Length: 234
Length: 397
Image 1: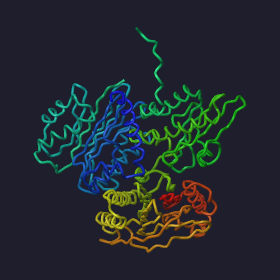
Image 2: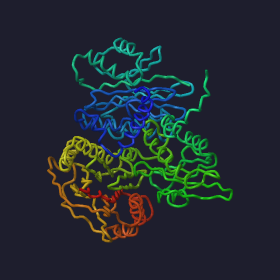
Image 3: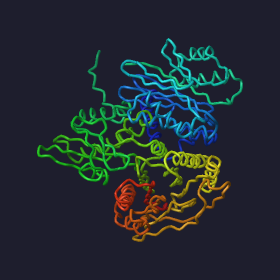
Image 4: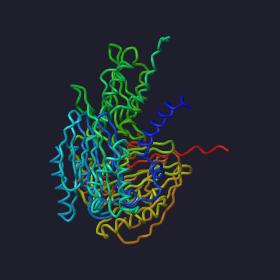
């Protein structure tokens, strides 16, 4: 049995990669992941997201959104090159499809600017213009933006709005947007402290579980989003 | 006692590619092909959004010029989806092989294979390697912009950025069918979309033409396509997918704008097709040497009125059939002199390319449309989806 394990591990990895590739052409695997139907807003939101975690020699990222089947406008996004990691955490506004359209516009404007090779602050300026041009100030989006240098660990940050950043000594960075839940800094810090031994990919779910316990009801009224980045550096 | 350790078998190149950082696939390919096959000048070229040029990813010094996606050895490998070998006097050979993912043509992998090594087995090895590389690119694109950037000859508009991230790819192949699609103007597209999804028994395919221009069109199409997918993934039938998308678009835009959509659902075993024609995208069929439009009952576009009920129609496809769906931007586009591109021109475009693969057909229909329009960027979006039906071997009892 034991001697089969390396082979099975490799097979599972091959399968994982092939499922990702095949998902471009089939709903099959995506449907298997759903125990309920997604709302239309959540459908649109999930297809914007890059994945739930990402791992490289220099860092490990994990993220989770709740309520997963009915999220409105919260979003996370990342993209890595040979030398940099760009990371974005967005706090949506509004409800339902309206919220998901706002997020769609904002996230794509940020990506469009990033893909044009524009620095972080200008990405924010361009996304701001795109959102303002469409909504004339009626709706807006809070985004926390990072641009990490993989060599040095230096990060450029633009804080356009409200998501909070906590930095812990053991190198876990976490961002949370519990919004109006009175889930204070101290409770959040405790939750992060408690999850310090978990890998980055598991932290967001654990923190959200604590939040659910704190709230006492299983379904949140608002989106809650946690992104965890473990920095290993070079 | 220490035994003489036999050297560990090398990890497979697939596993090396899988464990490479998302940004380093080309560097890893160079190392693997260099170490294991003695290959030099390894270059990955990706087709640009307009499928006009092949652009190098992480180019070697002095080799950063884009190449034609239609002409030249690399262009031929891309359009004909076959290896192209250029032998040199010293016995080495420059070999160009297609990089594709499940029928979606991404680009070309070029390498100089050594002498000996530039033989049939060497080329076959490179073809296999290119497929593994293509699959890894598709897998890592979630985490990096790198490969997507190589495909851009210029910046996309925000509307086009939103549209492209909705698309499933430019093609898809399975034993029962092959799909190729093309969208223009690729860098500024607003509301046109195509989408498909297969399970074991059926293929669902849609062509959508969101009204309006720019970001408004793109947001509208985003809602329509999102709603169609949401309904499809909930296991609803075709008419109900249309009904739910109609409601979602109407709820959001109140009938001011709407999306014209053609919905098709193919039974992979029998070739029976359910269809809902909610608006204007048209469908043509080429069977043997005859091209004819498949006439369908025109129903209301998605989101025009509240609570529209849709009905499915049935037709069937046979092995060897080619279906071509075109958006309004194709059948409605007029030349500078005011003549519409029209059915005749479309038939000619379909007739001149019977031997070509669906992705080439879709591209050349749009290319002749651009010619008709006077050789400049189209003012309306044009989407063409071409589907070749192979069907299934009847089960032997």
